[in-house]
Length: 323
Image (cartoon, rainbow, N blue to C red; front, side, top):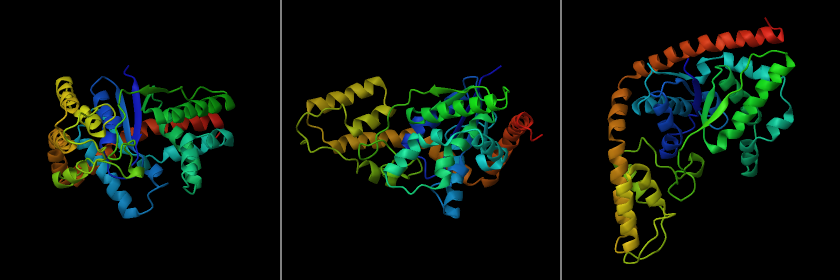
């Protein structure tokens, strides 16, 4: 029997290169590797940061279209909105009743946001409980994550154990992290690409906006005629995501030889990005004209997801005395 994969993406803004190389590319590949894939749009999680109804709807729609345009196949993956599976909220409350405050207080993401001066809401503190329910209700064996999300999977493992031990049952198997080989994707300022840093290269950008963003990437002040070090350079790091080994070696040689300005390197990067995502842009335009199809995909995905979620919730209810 195929191993089940579960992952989610938060619709808190437009998807960018960091999202693609950090998660989406891996998600698309896994559906073609014999896994049973469940992917959801984490719209309940987005409420901790996006509190404009129309904006949130546009982000949800954008994520759905982007995933489909980038190659997600609804015949191979169960793709749905988190909010279309209300059973998850019931399960999250059950976990809240067996989980200590100390575990939630140790959450890196919570502490990081507090340190950055973000005023915490209850939802931000409760976030790991909902994430655990998102995962465990589908009983996946593997959860694809980046390095910064490993703690959430570990907390999910803890909550599964708390529930099973409290109610002397074995309802929830232990999910394991599946680490990808995704590289760190630098933003236009050299920091990790992130919506919260405002340094992204958005997938939806048209060629005019794409050119403006790429030409604004920060570089050092090395003169055109001087040799340059490709290691640690933002432009070269981004170019390397798209180029083959021969192309990377050729550009690195030009850097070290001198006589090439960063503007020329940016033009090469622009060409790579535009060419790589050309099929995506064409498919996205096609899907924008088919809103009913996109909605049907999400609803059918939710129908399949709820069949699994209801069965798990019923097991949990029976274990703790609610059924």
